[in-house]
Length: 363
Image 1 (cartoon, helix red, strand yellow):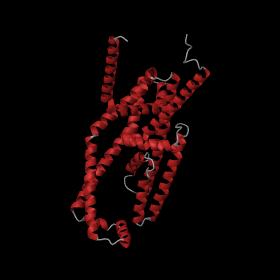
Image 2 (cartoon, helix red, strand yellow):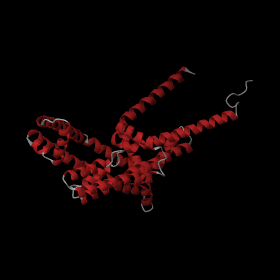
Image 3 (spheres, helix red, strand yellow):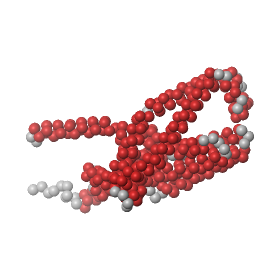
């Protein structure tokens, strides 16, 4: 090769890699919100097609994006506001407990007294030692809660920007999604039909995983809100919103909420409310095991163990959004492996049937 052409190719490669690295570094904080916007656009696409019958594509995208923002972002903002307010109130209360003698009053709670009596029957308990340990635990809890609230408040601008990127991504994916898919198809090293197969896997996984988690969480939230309303516990709406988030967490879900409420009722000598909460909580758990598999059975074709492990891995890497993205990424990866295996088998079969294809006869 001509040395000039070789150096020119190397410079082009270096320039391309440099620009790619710079672009990814610049867009790094927004890759996850853009991906969430793509997931939201896929889920909302049937709604977009409905409005497209009566309005232009951009108007339809605007209406759907507005409905999604009002239906999802407003409850989430309300939940975060309520949670932050209640945490601030709790921190203030714990500070008062730490500075005063209210630990003695706290120890007079019937449930705490039963626990101390039970532990005292097994191990001798020194009341002053328990008080000192309680004060230390309160001090540590206050410090951690204060740090968490400060971190959350300091990250609010970044969260608002990420939310705006999700909304804009949803709008543009709905409006120009077909053109973006053609662009990806031209860049893909796979054949067009294989690239389309990967996209359909991504689409089916989005609908199965996200809809399964979300609808199951909605059912749990409604049931938990009704349970708190029937038993006359405070803040049933807040508990419902909290269940909407907790219901998407594997192996945890709403169990801590209804179990804690049942323990509280039994400790307060309210067996009727405690039994209602216990039976209602078991019904909530049963609803989760019915709704989620029913929604996911025709969409996400993936082994449950892989789906579970992918959720934990994605949560560790991406945070709370990993609950949705983990199984989706795993499903696309499995589909890609299947496509790769099919292509390799075709190549091996072609090589066996045409042994001279890759080794032409020498003259």
